[in-house]
Image (cartoon, rainbow over all chains, first blue to last red):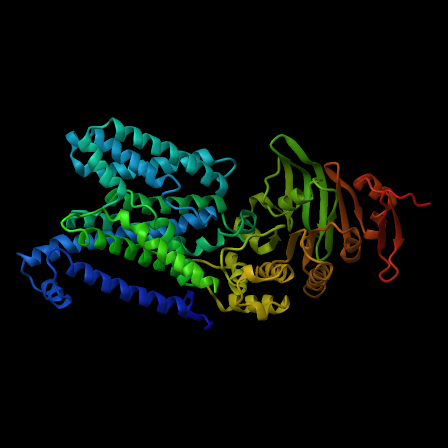
Length: 343
Length: 263
């Protein structure tokens, strides 16, 4: 294993693992290739060179519209959603010290889903569909807050968070099903697409709003990055080395919920990314939150991007929700990594 | 001067009182060993020494100042605690683990100073874990792992080190290895060591002072020779035994009896 690179400049000092560095570079290159592929493929197939020409020119009609107004925002949104869910899952897994933790399991997705279906059933006719992301975000936030408060017993212990999370999740899933069954068919159909998770018809405006929501969260993540590793020690050890454990846990939980809540608000219940992407990332780069977070984002982004690419190109003229293919893609790759590790 | 002092300390979980109105002090630069039966409150007392447990009543003074009034990071620079079965973050290497001990000295800007590096290397060398530095903690044997954990507390660079049963789950030779290491740290670096041990004979061998935790208080305290008597073992552990001087070290040696009658 190569030595860590130590970087000091004035009051700043960091340790950097070169392995992390070049693996991240590889993943970035791969991501850019898939982005190009995503812009090239669809009902109209273009070569990467044509795509570059189109992106460089200022024209707007025909293929320009297809690439710049249809494919590009959708591609970006797919990537952002995957990246946000993956980082959210990584943080969550470290908080609850449980490899099975994910935004889906801990009520964040189910809270957003219940709220979204509720909105679709009762409010979308009067308020329009633009309020859907906010409703979903509120649902995610409320579910997470309820879980945190119910799990509290002289501090929120990881185990109680998981148990209460699973319970609340099941309850919200029941509420969602109830609403689906009692709603008119048209609502049920749009709700199903939402629940499966889809970036269909993403516009520039939506993508920009989503980016903005995520962008404001990045400083918090950078600020908390150093702390993620220490709070994976048990509570007494973490406190022993000077960590304010409960405060830190609350901050990290907030960061995780904000990320997943934002992603789910725009793309619906894309399941499984938050669980699998951090695991794949952890197998690819050595421990250390910063590196693993960036890798999780890249892996999660790629997963949803490829899933959406499959969903919208392989079954033409049908355009299937990306969420359907995420598990189909992620699981074999994850199993491959596990088996490779065994030998 | 004493490193840790408790004044009228009452500790409890929910409604059950574990330690009642305790006044005790841990001398600086000495090895203090807590003994007592299971559930007697040794670990609880240890936790309160490290500010992991808020007293119901009374205070714990760390280096003369009420520990509840100190910032978490300040406490972490004065006292390091190693719990009974510590959990390491998934997949991290020994060097990364030991580096976590530097946390109380770091800030967002300063995450790896020259001093951090020196202290981590010293801690690794001191505990003989330098050659294990790049191995994942999960892959170590019990004895190696315990040395890695001790290295982490050393990197914390505190005058006081508190350990909860540091020898549990180790075979005899590794128990000795850990205790020898702790004694060296005490003698060569004047560290104050406070620990819970179950083996009375090893406790007597390595302790300067023994505190016997029994009936919600410190039932007896003093040097091993003063404290360890047949009556005490009978009262505290409900065990018949004979105490003889250790033929090599001259500390008290407890020979426990089972059901057999010995005249």
